[in-house]
Amino acid sequence: MAARDLQERIKKLIVDRRLPSGAPLPTEPELMEYLGASRNSVREALKALQAMGIVEIRHGFGTYVGPMSLAPMIEGLAFRTVAGHYRGEDSLLQLLELREAVETGLVSRLAGRIPEPDLGELDALVVRMEQQAAQGGAGLAATDRAFHATLYRGLDNVLLSEVLEAFWDAFHRVHRDLGGEPQDPRITCRQHREILDAVRSGDSLRAEEAIREHFGNIRERLSTARPQEPHPPRDDRA
Figure 1 (cartoon, rainbow, N blue to C red):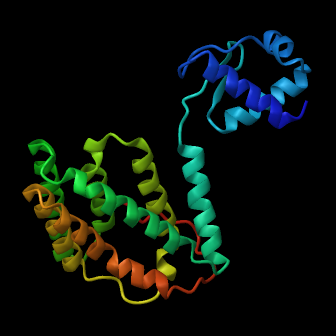
Figure 2 (tube, helix red, strand yellow; figure 1 turned 30 degrees about the vertical axis):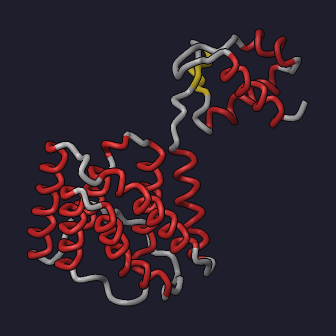
């Protein structure tokens, strides 16, 4: 039986038995009998599923259902985006368009519905951004990131959070190669204040327009970006 077929049958077993993360899987001999496969074939299938976060192999204890993390998918998306960028593709622009479409589509659901504690936290983040902008913009990117994470937190949508993280990771790996001038930090602050005011007031159309305006500069820069030699890794999010 092909390795991919074994993986699919193990995944089907997890689904059919409604096994949650952390639940033990059948023992190796039991899987060999259930799948009609050799020990080596079962082990290779489990290793492949472990790499995807679907199972977790605890040596000396057994095999368990994994955390089902989206991290492998997101890392793959971020890497594909960066690799495509350096091949001259518009992969980062495509990811931005996906993010923009998702955010403009969801922000209207938040208008007038964000709890007061979260609004207070968003207010504090915008104030911090304004302080950072006045000091030259150091740390602004991290606060921008925190603002968007906090804005959508109430939706309790893990996939959305992961897509946003993929964009940030990919963008900060290549942002020094982008064309055009970076946006004035004071404009970035104003845009976030506008987003916050719109969702607080319950004006969904104004919130959508504020999100689109926020992405305008980066969309323009990505549209004119020309890939260069990759830079050494550097963490620009602190």
